[in-house]
Image (cartoon, rainbow, N blue to C red; front, side, top):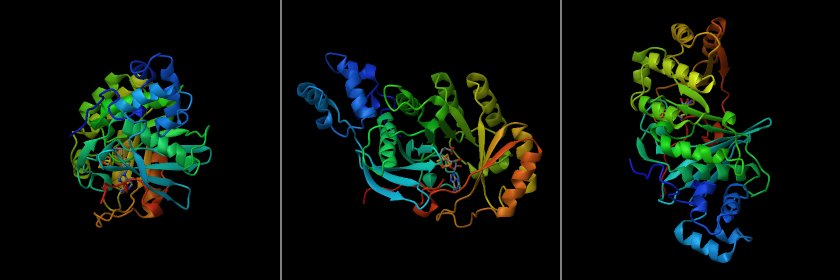
Amino acid sequence: MAGREGAPGAGSLAGLSVREIETLVTPPYRAKQVFRWVHVRGALSYDEMSDVPKALREALAARLPARSSRVVESHRSDDGTVKLLVGLADGERVECVLIPEGDRRTACISTQVGCGVGCVFCASGAQGVVRNLEAHEIVEQVLWLRDAVAGGERAEGTRLSNIVVMGMGEPLHNVPNVVRALRLVQDPDGIDIGSRRITVSTSGPRKGFEELLASGLRVNLAISLHAATDELRRRLVPKGGTGTVAELHDMAGRWFEATGRDVTFEYVLLGGVNDRDDDAEALARLAGRHRNVNLIPMNPVSFAPELKAPLPESVERFSAILRRAGVVVHTRRQRGDDVAAACGQLRLSRAP
Ligand code: SAH
Ligand code: SF4
């Protein structure tokens, strides 16, 4: 896997904190001004930074670009969901999605090109992992999506309300860059999205979980479980160093102890595979009372035509069994499926 993971400031200004910009500019007080141009005003180039002295802009421009990626395609769904295809400096591409819902404007962002976990129902992992995204590439997706709130125009004062790290890739296979990016988006002088409004979704690789815990980053965690027995889970989530279901349960407990935040279990429902009454009862026993479970009826993917969405009545029955056992159940509504922006439909696509 390539990538200068966590290397400060590797590819654009968007990956640097105020402190790090201070080491590049004189006088240092200019750093916050430059940071705000990137994170608050969304400058795409140094030319826009009109109140920053030209010599300083030129010195910075010689070292790194203001922004390294570009929007290659933008698709707006009938329900308001916007999917962006973002082109990276090396020609790779990732997708990210803006999901408006009531007062919320949620950015769903990717952390890798592809994914190495290979969940059988997920388009993102169908071709394996190409590389980790660097921190600036993760932050830049947030900046592009914020512009998308205003219809692609840059409008000062436009804000996103939430970030979900649920796009392409396994975030806990790329912890240093994910942690750096999520710290940057929380900066009150920048994008300013609080940790309670950020959710990282993971298939639960052991090593990455330990790294995340040790990093001290405190955000909401969602663990993609998909099965309540080890045999079935190994079949659905074959790779990536994820633990047994008991270990994943234990992970949720440890996250709660460390952060005081409840963990949500995510469960993609596949018709005839993991949506039977027995599966629901096993999941209810594993989750226990008061635990949150998000049920996600599978979105069809063309590479696995044998996998089907569950019948609406099985979704009902499944969630009723969980509810009776005291589990807090949410069923995710499908969004953006007409532009292939729904969960699991984000896929690897390269420049022609
Ligand atoms: N790799 C991380 C985060 C990205 S996937 C993870 O797996 O948690 C985000 C969510 O999309 C996961 O819960 C995943 O199970 C779900 N997903 C993937 N493919 C899907 C599909 N075809 N239909 C519905 N949800 C899917
Ligand atoms: Fe990777 Fe998540 Fe897709 Fe599984 S569901 S292949 S972990 S992106």
